[in-house]
Length: 433
Image 1: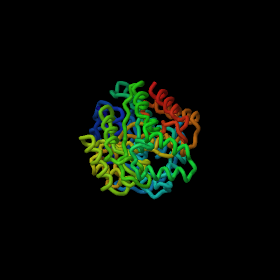
Image 2 (image 1 turned 180 degrees about the horizontal axis):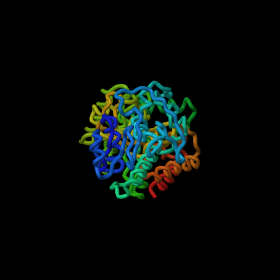
Image 3 (image 1 turned 90 degrees about the vertical axis):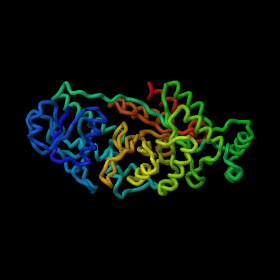
């Protein structure tokens, strides 16, 4: 067992040690504040204090983990080992406080302060230290933890741990189950008039052919998605939007029987979660109602979620998820850029900085979303594949988890998504192989 010496045990220290040692490396450890006990201990140990010990690995701490409130931090980033570090100490076996730096990123400490929001009211990645300092495309926390492990193995070559292994986790968002079908007479008429006003006669013709049963709905790509994932023995998570129609929420009614059957069929084979609506962001009663609707359809509790438009704010949105019984959230990533919002390729427990306590909610970050590549970054299909491959390579190097968000509609090969179904094919193949 690894014994860790520190001057004070706080919620933050206990949380980040659990994350690094127990969760990431499966290292059995214990914390002590007793100096004499630490000195007398004759097995593996680590010093996380301002004291000096000979022939014992040491990480010198900053003050972040002994604070019980959140205040703006002065962060100075320095290059180190083809990457970057901050909370620099220039003492010990690593020249920075790896625990404070990791805590800062995975708790999204910087998002608790007033910052620039995009047009949808979301935290903009350009606020982040990762964007400003150029390491958004690195799983930097994974690098730091691997460096920490190297230090421990240098002193204790027989240290027992379980190395993390690379894996790929696809996820699928169903914002619009169908382009034309099951929309109701009012929305169909509105769609015809809207297309006529734009002079989009192709849309009018296609809509007529689909609702008359002469053509397949273009968003009905479900069998294709299943076949692709089955080919590589992958199990995607599906997130269904059950929202009242309006604004950014244009899903089919949750009372539609065909839509319900679609959800049930997927739940028979795959994990299915709620895609909380745009309006649920500020109204917990809406969130609660949508979760209950999905639970009724599935006939069981709903454990998984991802916010529609990836619109959430910390800590309120995660507090709301916990209130309605969600156990796993997949919203941690940027809707407008690819990369590592929290610097980590893997899951972890949400730590609420407002209450200064760990929680039971497991956060599953994603690194790539189809809309980011196409709508925001405006990449062509070949550029998109190349940039995503770079992200995958970075995750593979550290033995992390690579997670994507794709939509059924982005595989339709229509309009803005023409040529993009092959993009997903190439990404899945590269990530899975």
